[in-house]
Length: 372
Ligand SMILES: *Cc1c(COP(=O)(O)O)cnc(C)c1O
Image (cartoon, rainbow, N blue to C red; front, side, top):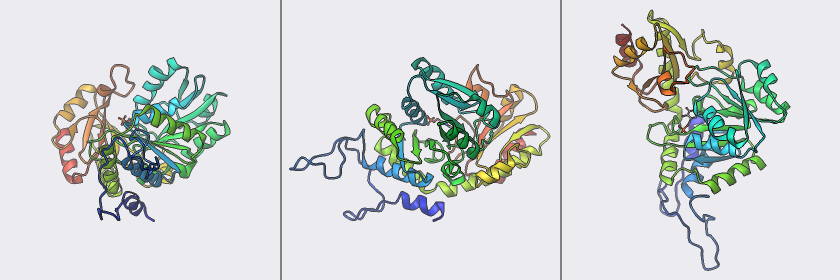
């Protein structure tokens, strides 16, 4: 089946008793036992499991082609739970360019707890091999990466991980399973901030881990999910499931508008550089074509000048909202160094754009007037 059909079927749960086409939201925190002291549908209490979360988790596993999925209250809660499943003394390899919260968790939470980590440019496979320690358990990839849109060769890095007895994790938030399925390239775990494209409407916080195999490590994470309870509410799960129904059409439309915007910006005299996997000028353009079904709807642009010129430019925009986050239906733009704070290594003239569902020509006209 095509991805779009799969996404619809995976989130479709008609109920033969009531006839509902759209499932209800099960707010009950607890589930009654029958006269024989049995749980009729195996639901006990909403932290370990409930119908809305179970439905979302099944859909997530289907979308990525995995064996089992776990939903969390945020992307960060998902990442945190995965690291909690390691042991003090273990080592993690992380890409240099990554969502700032991933290294922040390793440095501020897990380093004091006994995990060590190394950051490496995942595009440099020799550097990846050289950074492996005998206690390396996870190689964490993020591709395309935030905010430089670097592309990691998932097949090559998974192979390096497996040769070292480690697992390869891919933060697939920016590509989404519409454009990239990391399990097809040997990855073992996929992570998502479902806050972004999966929900798609900038109104729910959520995260997920999907495992290619339902093994001992996956079960350890499942135990931590139910025990520590960093889980989304039934309503949040219901909303994310609803978002998934339109994921394919949204992401393809947003990606095609992003391509038009990237081409426009690249040709503009006020622009220094555009970072977008769909441009022939992108360093990994060939790899993008092997690994992705489309370049996605995120891009970064460096304008000529410094922070002041960059901020003046976005101040003149009318159709792009100046806000952090991404993956919603409305276009957002952000001066990334401001968001990352004083330790940011992001170029000061860089603006990150999340392309929404507005009409491409309108967005381009807005960019043109602001750059003029
Ligand atoms: C937003 C984001 C996260 C963190 O997710 P939250 O839902 O904000 O906790 C992780 N990785 C990437 C690539 C993101 O964009």
